[in-house]
Length: 173
Ligand SMILES: Cc1cc2nc3c(=O)[nH]c(=O)nc-3n(C[C@H](O)[C@H](O)[C@H](O)COP(=O)(O)O)c2cc1C
Image (cartoon, rainbow, N blue to C red):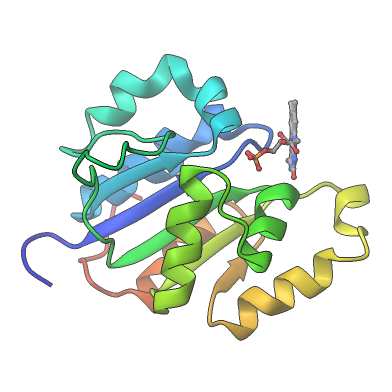
């Protein structure tokens, strides 16, 4: 690892993300010293569009939600670790199955294949959690070494410091 460690911060469209993603995760992670590579699902990008400037101000890397053209350079370096928060039922299923039909799932599926440290904050409603495939999808992720948590941003920060202790803890987070 040369320079600041890069964290892939991926968010999907679960309720409340627009309220806590930046203050609860992106800002503390940037303060800790992570270089943030933010990628959003297309729906999360719609929800967070009004915050792109503030999110972008936390990093020198562009906030992504679309794929690059083949002739374009990769906008993000390969991250040293990933946080996928919040993770919807939909995007958890795609990640477990290797479905990479948007830029967020593309980077997550590649990271899973590389064995990159990853924390997933599952945010699914009670009915969604009883979908017959959900528990199998979580098992696939856990068997691949992913840390799946279901609390909130604070739990994500704690878990990340355990699985990817590449930066100093932030006393303000
Ligand atoms: C206000 C609102 C809140 C939602 N909250 C959740 C949620 O907490 N968890 C979830 O899995 N889906 C939730 N959904 C549904 C997802 O947004 C929907 O399944 C979407 O297709 C997910 O896309 P993505 O995984 O590509 O971001 C919510 C939808 C709306 C409109």
